[in-house]
Length: 238
Image (cartoon, rainbow, N blue to C red; front, side):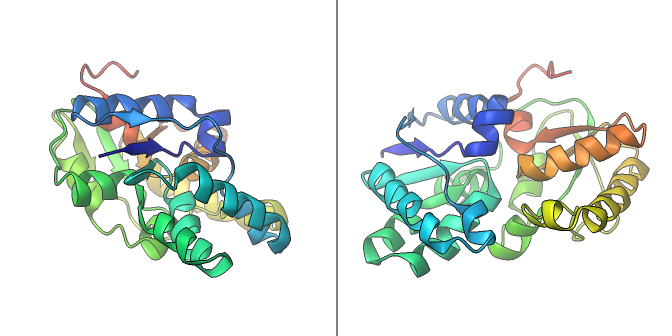
């Protein structure tokens, strides 16, 4: 089984630890992960901004780079949704077949590997924020929660209004900053009210938005990607 990591722009540029955690986790589960260096952006910022013609070359690049793999794993529900939902509409059957083999991390663990217990240890109180693309586009359901519930030492705290958007929304936060900030403030207050020390999600874009908002509110809650929790075996992230 040939497995490739699609690390995504946000993770590569701002959160490289998430990519490393994904590889460490999959290696621990016996999966050899390849990293094609030719990979690039999935094109979501272009498409969301109406630049369809500029998205096409990135779709073709993705198809060429990842076409030879059995599975492509990405620690980003947002980018996985872009590939699976939009690529088939933008290109032909070959792209659709490659897109179908693209999995968000929790999907790959639960659906492909058939595991929820991954040998993780994270002795903290954590609340889980289901991001919009994971919740509505991919339909991740309870997969991330099932994985978190199996982590030794972790206490999962319920988040009020969990299904409400954090306000990031990619280019939405740029085009509508006031609304985005207000939504983020509401979500951050709900996160802090759980009493958890960390908020977990499957998208670092949302976690960056929440992390900045939490810091401005003076909250001590820290954003942590699901991959980093699942890769932890010593509980030493903090």
